[in-house]
Length: 324
Image 1 (cartoon, rainbow, N blue to C red):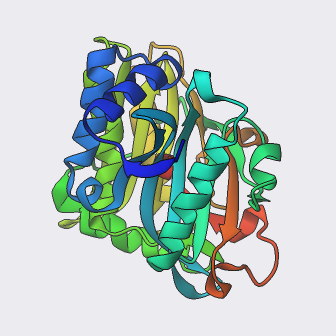
Image 2 (cartoon, rainbow, N blue to C red):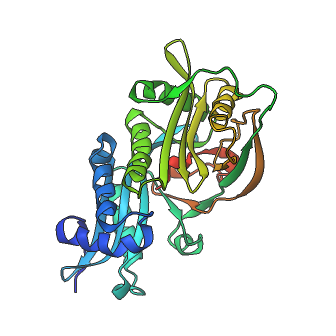
Image 3 (cartoon, helix red, strand yellow):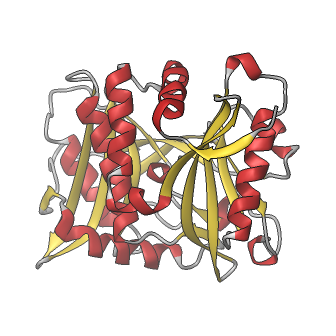
């Protein structure tokens, strides 16, 4: 029976959501799981850059995946990247090469449309995707603690909730911080907004009190000069992205000290995240460094998408909030 690559819509999309909800529900019931996906598609960035595809035969789906269209920089060159996420094979069709065929057909399509490289984050280790030509890019998750001075309390730093008026400042901070790195996303206003909205939507659709998304900035004059986006779950903070005009990151560290000091009597949260090697606020202590749970892997599709040499951890700036 002929296999066809199709955009996942209508009944096919419903069957995909039914099957994948069990794995990737993130604490959402089936109704809100679908609402979360559709809300992401409705954002300005999602409408243009996010889609879901399926390999179908005889009216049923065999495998599915999300596709992200991204702009990035590799070794000083602007490149287009096809991000592959949520790869899933229907239980009834496993062991028949459906996921491999889906990925190859998607990448062939994106290569013809101008993509230079493919990127994914594997939850199942690197072996399967290595057989498809993907190479591991080493990345690390950090466990962090905030250094506090009990004699002084919170620093005298003006901290407020961030909003859309701050996004241009965030984009500028990100661009300056990313420039020395061999590989990074080119994060424009819509992508930054999408990354925040995605986690904010997840928190809003989750059962009350289970999740939160916090976005704070330090302000000087009328401009944001440092920021942090934090996902909160089960008392743990995950730094989704952060920035500081100060190369040392002291104002970012001050924001975190202010946030910690809001509830002086409460137990301090566990903090995790990824920070680029050039961002080490003096108020933060690295407690543990370990290989990232989601393995970053890249595959060249053109000469422009081929690194001049293998990418090392210090060559890459990639925020946890931009994982897919």
